Image 1 (cartoon, rainbow, N blue to C red):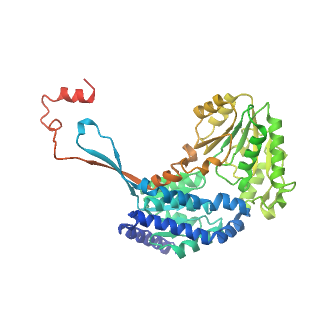
Image 2: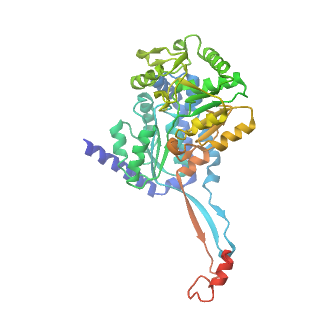
Image 3: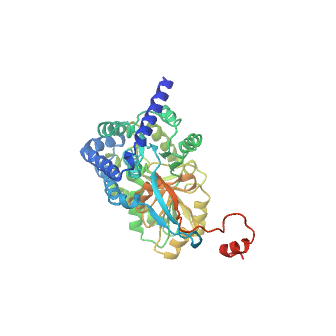
Length: 462
């Protein structure tokens, strides 16, 4: 059976290589037509997509449109800019190479593999695909088997709208991913956890395949004493508890100045009540944990400190209330891995140097959040910490700006995407020098006798 699967995937990759070799995907009008087709397919199936995401995560409609279906805006943005992105660009040449010209030609990589996660099961499949199509590639898509309903809807959409020799979606579990990773691709784009990211990178290395790894980590949220507490609390609570905290850039832990800790936590508690009512389990606006395995992992964290908000659980319905935990030790289990759920541990700091030290003692996060009205402290955070991205006085929202590359650094990921960065990620920037026969400088040719001093002057080494 395994051998049959391997043959099937090998044939699929070969079919896509044959399609790519026709040159169709290099035609800008073809790429635009495919992006338009993708947008139309999404619009025609938006209710089925929403129903599937809701079945997987019990996500409210508002969040589905805000965090999943908004990808149509990225398609529009890409269609608007694709011609300029794909143009060859002239660059300067040094005087000693006159009269040559230098040009950078963006060209597609070929056949790419996109592996998406379960937490935003539609968005995180389609967003990288937009870049792959825009850059002129063929693509094989592997959605998460955990978000089963969304996977089936995605499979139906691509089967009905796209030739599998161009774009194919493959369903299945871990074994399917393992077999796909044995094939040679021209780029692998993976979104998920760090441990699986290492497996993907190891498999890619056997073929010298470049990878983009969108991972995660413990994204800190630092709150300075000089801030607007009510607005900060509202934005922190929203960023943490949207999708029940199952967001790779959710604030993972709170670092709060001791002078405002009580006021901030009181304000966060008030925001949770405003967002989800007295009993979030009854709120139509609160998501559930994806499955029993993740529920059990998260529930174990609830004993790692003093629960001051929430803490209620319902194993039958994979429900964990929006929870804030105080008096958390830096050595507690909840501080050793990405939480990826609706639990916010709180750590107090006395001065910004201490907070920065806590952040820098850990692997570089995917996002860092800092709330302060003090511009000098804002600059200090930017200067003295490293993270994939930063939001000053907000959470999550940087992901919605296509001009900002989105990606990690260190343990939180390799490479970036969104907007033009997506196009660049799935392109090769081919360097081309065009020379002329009008001038042929003899300096570079042997024999070299008597030429060294002139060369030194040209090189600025005299």
